[in-house]
Image 1 (cartoon, one colour):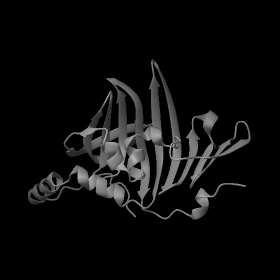
Image 2: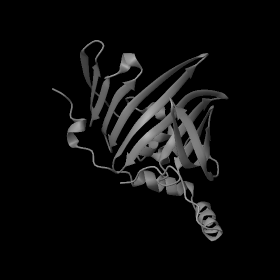
Image 3: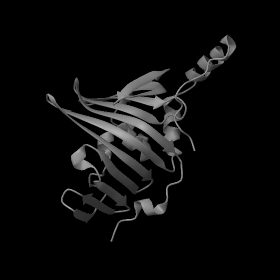
Length: 218
C-alpha cells in the first residue's frame, strides 16, 4: 500500500545530486506504468466546476476496483451529503437521500460513466491512459516541485511532477505525486477558461477494499 509523501528530507549535497538524477529519469511512460499497475484506488476528492461567474464545489469519497467496480459517496455540499453512486459491472445504482429515492439502470460501453468529469485522473484509475493520450499532446515533465492548495483551514502539500496535455480546444494541467506518480490535481480548460479543478485530499493506491463496498442494495 502506498500513501502520498507529504515532505522530503534533504540529507547531503551528494544525495541531492542523486535525487536530481533520479528525477530526470521519470517519464510519461512511468505514469502509464503506474496506471497499468493499479489494482484498487481510494481517495477523498474535492472538485470545483466553473460556469461563467459561478462555481460549484463538491467533495466525495471515491473507491474504484477495475475494471468496473466504483463507489462515490458525497460529503459536500450539504444538499448532496449522503448521495451514493455505485457501479458494479454494468449495473448502476444511485441513491438520492433528499428524495429518499433509489434509481437502478444498466450501463453500456457508450454510456457516460460516473467520474469521467475528473479528466486525466479518471483515465488513470481506469488504466486507460493510452486512450486518453490519443487525443492530447503531452509536455515534458516538470519537477518534482512543491504543490500546495488550501482545503478549508487545512493546507494540502505534495511533492509532484507537473505536465500539460493539449488537445483540440481543451487543455489539462496535471500534477502527479512524486512518490507514486498518482495524479493528485487536474485543471481542465476549455480554450483559455478554467472549467474544472480536481484536487485529491488523500488517497490509498492498491489497498484492500471489501467487496461489499460495491454491492448494490436490493
